[in-house]
Image (cartoon, rainbow, N blue to C red; front, side, top):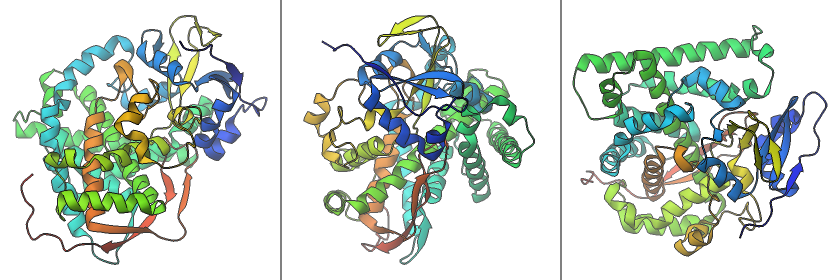
Length: 448
């Protein structure tokens, strides 16, 4: 029996700006603190009142009822300017048909095929490194994940210029995303340099995606991948481009962020790192991980899941009520914005004791079975759960296991772990690693 939910208000709202100041300073930290004030907490986005659920059951109910709590609010208004009504942003009325169209690209058999590409890409990356080399971790992981998703979903080999064009565009768009969400629309119309950069990045992204589609069409062959599904469905070029941009963003940035934080957290917790090396050394013997190795890498999976909990890449998404509803003891009118923040759940001490402690054993089978429903929201849940959740987990496990068994990664002094203010992803501002080889690499890569 779920006890009555408690409502509350976040303190510190200013008359016009609302909670803009704590959101700009450290949005993740602010949202994670809200569980102190209740299960459903009111915050202010400028003059707009919004509510943040801090109880897993409330989050579960919202995500299970996408008719009452549809994709909407300021997040999706801005997201639709980038991605149109693609699978990640479309309203409930369109979602089921889109998911049915795209789901074959993410069936388990397909993931097994994609894993071979993931293995090849991490093999190439880790072989390209040299002892004493210094890498910008997020940028390096982002290039890896972009190359992988382009190959798996669009049957294309991306050259360095294409990867850099995509990475630069997404970085600019992600950096300014929530600023446009939280601040008045009139500010975005001003000809400020940041706004001009945003428009140029969006134009560059669309141009790059357009070239990918054009090259694919010239091949005139059904590769059985995502792009083939989109073309076979008879979508127009604009709709195809919007779906591709959605998949490129969702399938690259979140995995790259997860790998970046995982390597940092392992350095901070040497006892976990030692146990992980023992697992990967025993399972892989120095080679790159593949699909068949996943059952032998349970700790690697737990490390990935705990990283997703402690440092959730996508820290905010929104819903909007479609009808008036009494929810969590609060009467909400139609159109009321609801801010769903995974850190508000993942870092709630009533759900995860000592929540900032990095402990992969939270994800042992018996511990997972005892978790309340709705306690893990790294991929959302319900009907709108991320279509690529298994894809992302698989890639993160394969990449992390391969890196850990082949290389020691030591953070360089001067790291700045603060997230960029109001960036769409929880990415550290600056985190570089020095590389030291652990084992001589095999001269040939055994078949997966």
